[in-house]
Structure formats: structure tokens, C-alpha cells
Length: 312
Ligand SMILES: [Fe+2]
Image (cartoon, rainbow, N blue to C red):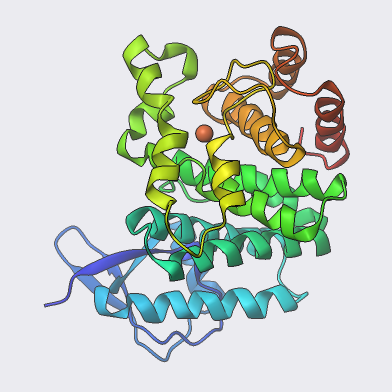
């Protein structure tokens, strides 16, 4: 008897033949929905969405076939100008979320890391070609309610930090490193999801202590892998640091420009996504209450970018 694993409906493109069978979950069993070799047409996808089905299932033995299908879909779709921005955003966010999930399940997997890299490169390529996708990626959080906040924040921070780095004309390789670090930066918090998802101001002293371990916990999970560069690990290690020595875990007072970009965008997203602070208040807090934590010029440029891109 097979075991079943969930897959995201958002990652299945219509009219593409699947090389695995797909099931839907009923209260008492899994029901065969689509045979391997068949394609889901747009109508069936829409009908599943209307029925609020977010996840489909495959047999666990087909997991590798599904991941390879996703790799091919990402490749084809990057070159395809056709799909609407919301479909592009759905697929890329689904691909990136899968990659983060894979890494946190098995941080020693080079393949999972490769997929995270593909995801970051794919996000950058797609938002560079089609600015409307940037906006869609930001709205994405409502698209897959089962995606936990850690995955959603990974995709959003990766997208915004790369867009920001691109606007500052950083090298492509550096932009990719920022994007990869952003996707993976918080996976250490997987062991304490409720602390991670609790508003920062509501943390008890003990919870705050636990929360502040997450950069170290992520680095610990990912270090000593020859396929992950020191630069990426350093970006992850410093993503909660500030220029005023108020960050964690190192209370540093110096950050490189790329480290500042990731730490600033991470702080902004934490305020908006988890602390539920209005973006205007979040930017005001960063500028006034937290003056000195972040480079003011960088902060002004981020505010401007958010306005220009229609993200606030
Ligand atoms: Fe973090």
C-alpha cells in the first residue's frame, strides 16, 4: 500500500501531461483523480480552486518524478511569455516553497539546495522580465493557506531583497546569493514554529531567547556542506543584525551592503507579515524609533522602491 504526500495545486500547470498519478484526499481514503500521462485542464484546475482544494496528493514513490516535473516546468515557464502574472507567481512561489520545505526536511541534500538556487534565480528572472509578477508574488500569501508563514516570508523577502539589490545595481551573482539566503534564512525556526509565528512584542522572555537562536540554528543545519558558499552562510548568520549592535545573535555593528539589504528587508517583512504592523508604520518605526539600526539612505531607497513598484 502506498503512502501519500501532498503537492501544491499551484505548481501544476494546465495542459501539461503529468508523469505521476494524482489523488484527492477524502475523509476516509485517497481517491485517484488523474492517471499518470494525463493532463489537468484549466477547467478542472478552476473547479478544484472553487472547491478550495489547495493540495493534491501523489504516491510517495512518485515524489522524485514530481520534483523533476517541477524542474522542467520552471525551466519551460521562464522562457514562456504566455502565462498571466498571477499564474507565473503561483508556480514560482510554489516551486520556491517546495524547495525550502525540501531543505528543511533534509539540509544535507544537494539537490534540495540546487532547487532553492533555481527558485531564487527563477524569481529574479521572472520579476525582471515581468514587473507585474512582483506584485503577484506579494499577494501570494492568500493563495495557499496551508503554506506556513515561514515559507511565505521566505518567498516575499527573497523577492523584495533581490529586487532591491537589483535596483542598487549589485552583481547578479550577489543578487542570487541574497535571494538564496533569504529563502533559507529562517529554517532553523522550524523547531519552534509557534514562537516564530507569534508577534515579536508578545514573546515572553523565554520565547524571545528561543527566537533569537534561529540564525545560528539555520547556519548549524546548513554548515559543512561543500555546495553552500561561506557568503550565503554569512548572509544567513547576519540577517537579524543591525548597524547599532542591537541585533542578534552577534550584536554586530558592521554589515556589508548585501548583508544590510537582507537584514533590512527581513526586519521590514517581519513587522508587516508577522507583527501585522501597517507598512507605513513599519517604515516609520525603522526610520525614527530604530534610527541608526539601518543605513538611512538605504532605507529611503527601499521606501521609494516599495512605492514605485506599487507594493505599498
Ligand atoms: Fe530571521
